[in-house]
Length: 161
Image 1 (cartoon, rainbow, N blue to C red):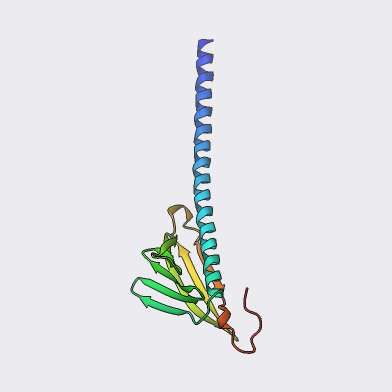
Image 2 (cartoon, rainbow, N blue to C red):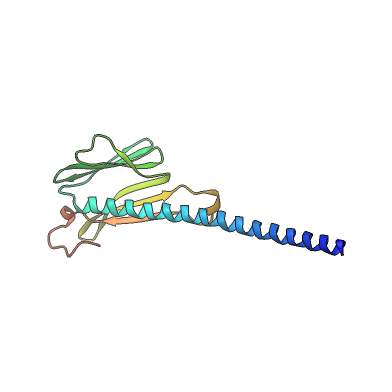
C-alpha cells in the first residue's frame, strides 16, 4: 500500500510538472504575442500620424538624404513638421516643439519617397520593424501612402484615401 501511494505521488508530481511546463510556454507565447501586437499597433498609429501630416501639407514636401538618416520636411500652416529616420528610430518634430521625440522604434529600414500616380503626386513610406528571433518567418513591413492637399494637379480627381 505504501508503494502504491508513492507511485501515485510520483505520477501526480509528473502531471503537475508537465502542466506547469505547458502553462509557462503558453504564458511566454502570450507575452511575445502581446508585445508584437503592441509594436504593430504603434507602427499603424505612427503611419496614420504621418499620413495626417502629409495631407495637411501647405506646400511641396522636401526630402533630405544623409548617411544613415532620412529627413522629410512637411510645411504646414502652423510651421514645419519633420520626420527623421535616425539611429533605428522614427523621430518627429512639429511646430512649437523644441526637440524631436521618438515615435517608433526599433526600426530596421525606413524609406519615404515621392510616388507619382497619374495626375496625383503621392508620397509613400515603407517602414520595416526590427525582426526578433521569434518572428523570423514574418517580416514586419508596412507601407503608407498619402497625398498632400497641395499635391493635386489641375484637372485631377479626388485624392487617394
